[in-house]
Length: 67
Image (cartoon, rainbow, N blue to C red; front, side, top):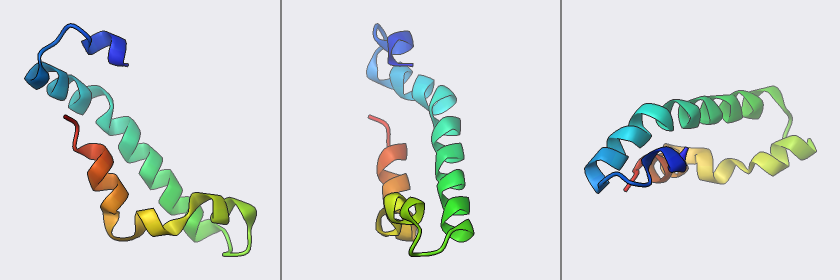
């Protein structure tokens, strides 16, 4: 994805990422939230997801704030 915007300026790169990366990130976090609800706390998958970064949307905010 980054190869498509390597020659762009900061504003163009941000717009490119918003168009191309944001939907992927949104789907990723939606799927992680689904898995959190579909698994029990003792399951290895649930432990691997680590709910702490998902709480309050902190990870989502950090990842979605493209430079």
